Image (cartoon, rainbow, N blue to C red; front, side, top):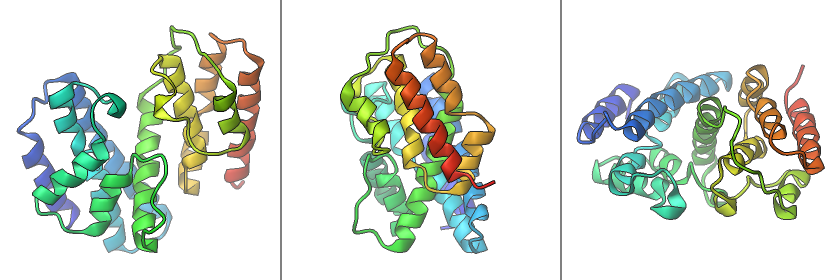
Length: 237
C-alpha cells in the first residue's frame, strides 16, 4: 500500500464520522501530523524510498481506531473505554489491509511494552510510528500549567530513577499526572532524530518546569535532573 492509497482509504473511512466534533477533528489532524513526523524520522534513517513511504503510511493509519472509540465512548482514555490500537487493527482488517507491518504498527503503537516476537522490520516501523506519535503528543498536549495537584509516589519516582517504562496510564487522570506521564515518554524514544526534536523544541524540560510551579516536592527536581542527563546522553553533539 502506497501513501496515496492509504490516504484515499483513510479519507473515505473518516467521512462516516462527525469531524465537526472537537475530539474527532483533533485525531484527524493528529493522524496527518504523525504521518509527517514518521516520514521525517524514516528519512533520517536513510531508508529506501519504498520504506520511507511505508513509514508515512503507518503514521497516517496508526490512530484509525480512535474515531470509533470517540463515537462510542466520547473519550480518548483507553482504560475507561477500549484499546484503540486493537480497535484500529480490527478496522484495518475490515478495510482489507493485509500488510503486517501496517497492521502491527497500528495494533502495538500504544502499548506500554511491545511484543518480543516481531520481526526486525516490523519492530523498526513500529518504533518509527511510536516515536512520531509521542512527538506529536508532546507538542500538542500538556503544554499549560496544570491546575490540580501532583501526587507523587515512590513507584512513579522509581520509574525515572530506573529509566524504565513510561508511567502507566492507570497512575492517575489528573492533568498534572498526565504531564508527568508525557515526560516519562523520554525513556521510550528510539531514534536520534526524535531526541534532537525533543531537545531543540524543549518539549520535555518545559513540562517539568510547569510541574514545578505547582509542586515543591524535591523528588520532582531529582526527576528533572535525571531527564536532563538522559537527553544529553542520547543526543550527540
